[in-house]
Each structure stands twice: as C-alpha cells, then as structure tokens.
Length: 550
Image 1 (cartoon, one colour):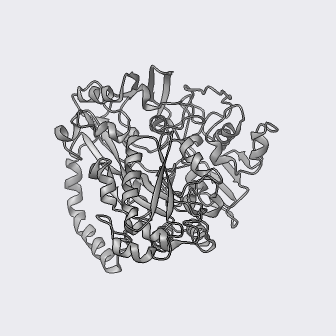
Image 2 (cartoon, rainbow, N blue to C red; image 1 turned 135 degrees about the vertical axis):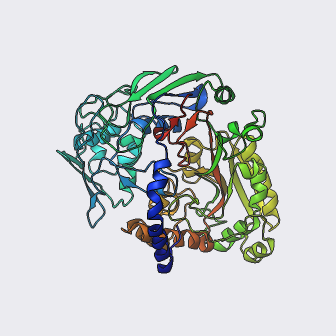
Image 3 (cartoon, rainbow, N blue to C red; image 1 turned 60 degrees about the horizontal axis):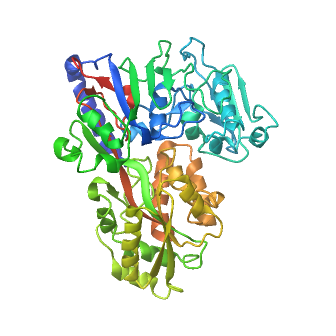
C-alpha cells in the first residue's frame, strides 16, 4: 500500500525475469484445488439469517450466502486484502462511464452471464433489482442506497412502479442520481443489487428460491430449518468455485453448540460474533492456536470509537479539547477489559489497516495515555467541565464508560454515564444518537459500514451532508468537506488512496471529532477438511474447497 521507488520496481522486474526459468518447473508441482463435495454450514437461531431475497437480506450470514449466488455490476475479487478489497467490474464490462457532475453512471453489461434457468443476464436484471428496493410494499433496507436516484421518491410514495432515473436498454444501464455520488459504483457491489430476473415479483416476505446468475443457486429454503445451495450449471463468470454446493442447517440451539458442531466435524463453518469464538469455555485458542489451520483472527472492518458531539457546547468549536481527550485515553487499558489483543487491533485513525487508503501515521499513543499533552491542550478549554456519556445498557459498554470516566477525570473532566437500553450495534442505538437535541457529549459506537471503502469511514462519518444521519459527531467543517469530497472524486485509484491516507491522519490530528479505539477482529473457525481459504477478512464461501478423502 506504500508507494515504491522506481529503483524498487526495476529490481522487482529483474527478479521476476530471473525467475521465469523456474516457473515451468514450479507450476508442474502445484496441485489444482480438489473439486466436489458438499460444504456444511451450521447457524444458530440467534445468528440472524433474516432472508435470502437480495432486496431484503441485511445480516452477515445472509450476505455470506448470497455472495455465492450473486452477480453484481461491480464486486470485489476472491482474494485476500488489500487486493480483495479493491473494487473491480464483475457483470459490468468495465468501470462505469461517469458524467462530469458525478450524477450519471452508464454501465455496459458484458455477455456470457446466464441465470440458473438459462436466460441471459441483461441490464434489465439490475434495473429490476433497483426497483424492487424502492417498492413500498417491500420495505427494503436497500432503499437507503437507492433513494437518491432521480424519481425514487415517486416510487417510494407508490405513484410509479419504476424509477425514472434508471433506464435499461439491452446491455446498457444508465443510472441518474439527484446529487453527486462518487461512491455509487461501490454501492452496486452490495447484495441488494444482485442480478434478478426482470419479471421477479414483489413479495414483502421475500422470495428465497429464484434463478440466480452467480456460481451457485438456492434450490431450497425453509426459514428456520435449512437452505440448500447447488452449482449454477450456466454460470458464465470467472470466480473460483470448487464445492458442489452448501447445506445450511439453521437449527443450532445456541451459538456455543454451533461451534461444538464444527469441533466435532459435523459442520464445516458457522457465523457468529467474536466473543462466542473467544469464550475460554470452548477452548478454541488453546486447542487450535491462532491463524494456523482451523481458527483464525484477522483485523476486520468494524471500528470501535467514541463520538464527540460537536453540536453541544463542550466540544463545539473546541478541537483542542477533542485532541486532549484523544491524548488522555489509555486505549490499551480500554481494550484489555474487552478481550485484550485477541478482540482487536488498537488504532488512533478512522480508516482500518486493511482498507485501501490506510497509512499508519502514529497520531496518538496507543499503549498508554499522554496526560502531560492532554492537560496542556485542555487548559482553559474545559468550559463547564461536564460531559454526558451514552453507552448501551450491557456490561462491556458500561465497563468502557466507567474506565473512560476515570481516565478523563485526570484532566478535570467530570463524566456522567447514561445507559441506553438497546444493543450497542443496533440501529435503534444509532438512531438515538442521531436524534436532534439528544443531550450526549460522548458516545461509544461500533461503526461497521457496508462497503470496504475509505469514503465509508471518512465522508459518511464526517461530511456535513450526513448530519442527522451517519455523521453522529455532528462534525461540520467547510474545508474538510471540500477535501473529503475531492478525495472521493479522485479518478485514479492510487491517487485516491493517497488522498484518503493523508486526510485520515490530518483530521484525526487537527480536528479530532472522533476517538478511534480499535479495529475489531474477524473470527473464522472451520472443520479440518476445509481448504482453499480466502479471508476478506471473513471467510469467502464461494472459493472454499474440501480436502480429498474427507
């Protein structure tokens, strides 16, 4: 991710040329991945498989399964980060043509993709996917990403059946937006926009079994019981896929039992939250180690942070105090009460390390507080020296709040903790924080955006156009707005990554509207017969294989 010098590139080229003579010998020894077999998945009732209709699915287990059946205009390659988090065309023949005002996107759908019933995939398949998210009867969470399309309000209100801003003609799809949205190509990689048959009906309960254009297709779905997924014999793409299909059991009575089934070899994989896999009673770390063969912990995409409310008197126009808070907090101590190093990686920046655009800038101390610097910055900036801390009413968030209270007392700031009776990661909690006039100054938040793009960690969290929404800190800066929007519009990927890397460090260092604490770990536990593992950072189900003789 760092720029390389010209001499370094030349050296690498020379080394590659010298290795050509060995290539034929080495390749002859590389064995092709084993083919065939049924990959078994166990999901607990509480795991959250909400739906298998692309317009309605909105949980990690559902998206993991849909990734095996979907074809999208743009997608992410089946490779490890950072390459696996760089957007590429899938059904699109190339990246879209974008108008100068960043409002019109023209995609050309390439030939070769077919649905599992043999029908070709054309632009109308993606137009139908978009219109289904806007249909009022569907109540699709995907409408969050399509309501900015020209005419979306008319469809949402029930006055039209299709949105005016989407035109499909043969292989050409044109999407017109009401406002500039440089992030729109990344939005098309979400499962909401999987190609669906142009005549797929609306159903508020969801349609779980339908023709799909990805490597696999759902052949049976019984909610609360099982999902059966098998190969799409008409698949025309290039994604690696090796197993014959997936059998998904949705009836594990508890998350712990799901893990035990994988331990016993009765299942090959299952999804759940990190604390389940890190439970000492299950003994995964002591039995299998970490990142060896079966149990893996990789830096993920979720950022644990404190939002500092710039709409309130304490932090409004007070970057010195916001920086002081960043220096006063002992991030390691805060991490230790929530699982320690296994739970995540300490950070002082907003873009996670695996996301394109991250550059390690060492803005604040990670291992301990710098109280001297914190007291210097907070001098004459404490105002009434009182802060209200919102945290969800669960043991870990409240423990974090108590420790933050003690640490900020060292710089003379008195913290009042107000528990919020909802789960820390729930939409209800975030809605509470975004409510105008809600009297909080500091809030503990886990931010898990839907796209692994620096724009999702910078623009969505800090741009003024997202005030009252994802800009939870109510941060407002004309100059930083310009810089973030300029970074989002930068056409060249390398320049865009560089712009975001510099901006991430500068905003954290100078404006400090947030306190980044840690990037949460993504756990993966598999049976001993699972091979061809690609962690992006979660397990890429599409590319898995099963070892021979299993």
